[in-house]
Image (cartoon, rainbow, N blue to C red; front, side):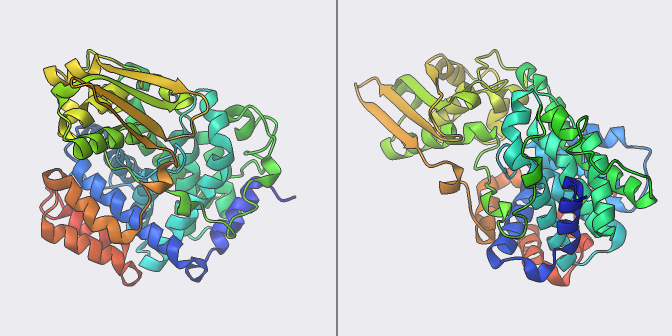
Length: 449
């Protein structure tokens, strides 16, 4: 019997570097570069430090981006995934931020095994593709039941990457995926409360996926139908096993990595279009905050109703400001964009004045991650801008854009120009290097490295 785990595991084990289309390989480099640049900038957040304290007693081969300490691989992935996710500017597949799980897992296991760059890139692609095979058809179902996509599908990405780099083979990766199916979870309430539980979920997903692969490597028996069984993963997270027979059938023929997009701003994926539109109006019309009488942002209804999006203040945490559509649009109108420092302007009177003038309209017919912004001004103008085609039109790019990403981070990136150049050069020629080589530029000058 061919189970879902078997189908996914065989693909991951049999995928070869030579099988990767050039654009998919380029996208893998782009995702790695974007994730690590954003991760370097994310070290200013205290979240990575909290995660490091949680694993302080661990010891092992993999280095932490927070301090350079060497800890157990699963613990390194947990901490480093938290760092990569702390700025909330990572890559996105649907609503899953797979890069924050895949890259810390690949680098941690890669340091443990000494994996070469060709194998790292192949494992990275396999991790995205396997997780996307489940997230693509399943996110709408699992999110409607209150589960967060990154933490529900992330363990599959990590288990795939770890299983591949540990050399488990098809049956071993299938077992790892079966264990991962039992280790997923993560709810949405913390978004509504403005607290950071969700920002640790991706780290836990990376940790759990590595643990799943480790248990499989140890030879523990696993449920072959852990994903599609009547009491399995799909039944729990999707509420149905319908469609199980189609999961993974297109692996190797279509490539989910082509659909991965990035974020221009350190805010929720659903707020990328609203902030982009606000920045456009400011740039195109020399718009000042005092000119705004009223602003209306029309969004996809699901996104407008997502926990935390409707928050109007008072604001006391970055989690609240990253999620609040009104706060994000206000920042875009006030400053022509939003950077991480802006998210801490909890008491900025200019932002609060704008928040009161911004209205969110939920449109059930509007496509996901699109928006239209209309601004009425003091001199009677009615300014409008719209993104109608979704994120592929304005948030998708290749490795050649990585330098621009670094420049857009400015002083927030936490790396010198020389270290940025070195990091990007190493990713460009990763086939000749190892995981340790990729981490080195990120850890220069970090205590303990």
